[in-house]
Amino acid sequence: MEKDNRKRKCSDLREAMFFALRDLKYQKKRTFFIVVLFLTMAGLSALFIGELFVYKDDRITRKYDTSAFLQKNDRRLSVRRLDGSGLTEKDRKQIEKVKYVEDVDLYDYVNDIQYDVSKRMKNPSYVRSTTGITEDDLVKGRMPQNRLEILVSAEDAKLLGKKKTYYFACENIWPKGEKCWFKMKVVGVCDREGSRLYFDPEFCHMLCPALDGYSYKMDYDQDVMSRRYTKSFSFYPIVSDDLKGRHVRVSKNYVMDAFTGSNGDQLNVYSAFSGMRFV
Image 1: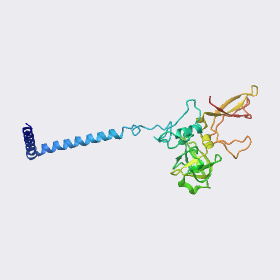
Image 2: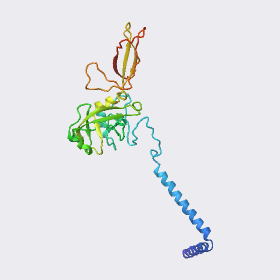
Image 3: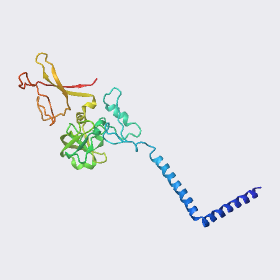
Image 4: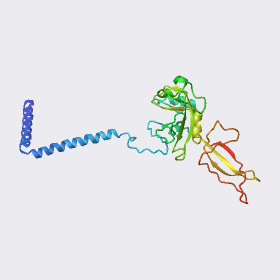
């Protein structure tokens, strides 16, 4: 029985080969068309399956919205407390223990603020704080001790001890086109890779206090009888170490409505600055 089955299979195979060779010989165009059709179908199927595997992660096809985070980094996670309060050093140490976490920045929202040595921001980089760096990470120098001292990565070790003016801008936190700049000194070199600056936490907080839950405003036009201020506007506070007493410095676009008396004469404006934390 088994021998008969084998003979039958061999006979069927010979017949199939006979007709296939006959088609190749007498119907070349038709055979060529069928072969090309099958090859095309196989190629398209392979391409389609390959696309499915490539785009199974929708981060590749997703359109990135920079209104929330300006820096397009799909490996970045922003962690917040339910009560809206800022993260602490204890929180940072706990997050660092999580698997696959490479670095933790307590001032992660400043990672969207750009800086550059050029006022036109030709080749900007993103701000990072020194909260994830310790004395053990230093190669040379020391840690920053005030707002205007910074660290550099090992690639920029030649900048140690030098002072430079850096310009800062951020379209999704500050109004578009606004910039501020500071002359800063490099006091240390850390072992981090790449070309990057690391800024003091106090400086990072100063750049975006509203995201820490703070609101700043100036009240003015004080009513003589009630001693209350009738007008106010919000502002971004930039701490300046070279000002003394009640002196303030304002930006170019600083605008405050004039306060005039009944006869049209401009009167003295008494103002009061206040800073408060949202509850």
